[in-house]
Image 1 (cartoon, rainbow, N blue to C red):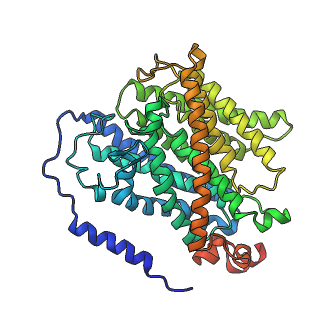
Image 2 (image 1 turned 180 degrees about the horizontal axis):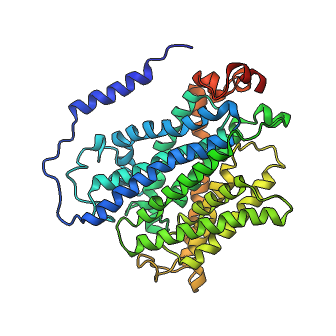
Image 3 (image 1 turned 90 degrees about the vertical axis):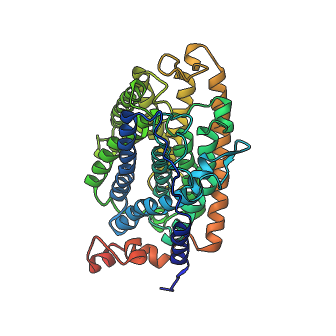
Length: 448
């Protein structure tokens, strides 16, 4: 393997910059800070972080035995890479001073300058800015990790790391700014996205579709020689961690400890339950057996779909959202098997489509009674403006995320080849990329 000191040099340069740009606060703002809100948001931040290891188990259990470690590592490495990127420039691009409503000024919080001493974020006035910044970091971490499911079993690890850096800078940060910054153009259009239907799930879903198309089919997909999932109990464990962590994801997006957080907590659990049941019951209606894998995938689809709506809709409406999203995603995942598209773990049908269904449902069911921040109620209540704005946002975000992902994949491929060699794919990425394996060396050859 060729020596490549450049990544280490870049990390050391950032570390040295931290020595000379320590961001020592002159004073730390405490006025208006609420202890209960701060405590809840610290807990929520930790809950969202645990979702990424949960995703690692969820994806790792579904790939074949030769690719478990590589698939799981792709989630864990995002925790390291995106954390450093966020402190240096990512937070500024997402939440810095707005440049035309499209992106933040990278100088605003460069190397977290002023984060400890600045006033709280305007939409989270009772918690320190640093807590808000790290809560948002966890969203930035899991979003590119979601994409890995479509690229599994054939992507070069070094290229993957480069891609998630580019994705975070040029897709995630702008979308976060558009949607959640008070000067963001989607925010000012009146688009409601409580916890990331557009910013997280649609962006990841469309990037996954672009990646599956760009990387082309795995050899096993072409030959029809699929190996079974490595470990269904891993999938169950991952689902449990995701469901648990999602309470921080959605209820934490209330940005305070109050009735809105409680409402979002309740809709999150209810939609997940409805979606898990809907997936296996839809399978049963088509003559298939109830499966652990099916229930787990359904739960995640429900969590995805309720994400943009969690703090805007009632608990009974969350049952409908979860069930409908699950049935739609199940049907599309089934249709995908009849095509040449090789989205390894159905990221687009589950996250991309689930996020879009959630955005549509928010435009239909958002209610002022649940959240006073809703200016225009949903179509269900006889008002069309919000629904129309959500359709506009859906198209704009879809085109942007898909097109930009394709461009970034091409750029990455020009710098570092995205696809592993046929020999490496046959051996499995655990061995070929990391010299690690769940199985003994002799068994690896047998699996190949």
